[in-house]
Image (cartoon, rainbow, N blue to C red; front, side, top):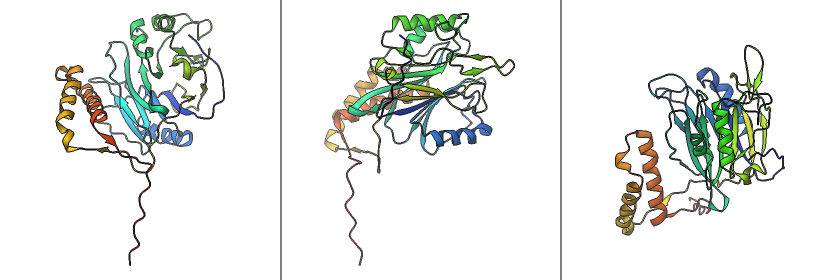
Length: 307
């Protein structure tokens, strides 16, 4: 399913997708200035080339990342504005796709999934793409897919990734490709030829009201993509929300946590990052079942004046 509609909306969430081709210290300042001027809620990054030893921070954003282990290159990450509520997603591991995801809470407690993906060799299978765009929630999946196909590139010779993407779209009627045809997201440094291999997929409701445009060059052969979505994320203002703990509920809370971790087969997980994501989900579910959250909107009582 394809969508290239342009409908102006009043409630918008800004998402950026970019293949950084190495977001090293030399590129960080320009990138920080870019996100400071555009103020996105979500940034989907691919080919970060980060390592576990490289500790990067952003003042206004949380970072979830997946670095390559034992070899240079690749890597995916998502920046989430610190005003948003989010949870990490547990994505299926595959050999051909690097991906990481988060779930952001929007108005009416509606979840929206965001996934950043990278297909290094353009050899992904259809089911690997289906895993990225098959969701009962609202979703945005963006990344460097290395996929060529005539559906989004005129006169393109379809490769395996392109055929897999097309097959996945035909299978998943709840997924829309919102990247316009011949969008030209990559410019070949040697020939100047443009190609459209950075793609963005969304659920139909988001696709119908989305706009997409190219950003400035930022030191990569790929151009950042700015996506405006008709979604209203739940924002925290003032003090962050906290769980209101109740000692009388510790026993049932502990039982719920054990049950949720058993569902996730937590004790069989060997990857530390996956283990953290799994435990976080179980903890959040147990908290939601047994405890209440504080209200950050409630104004503080004025402190009495001192004599």
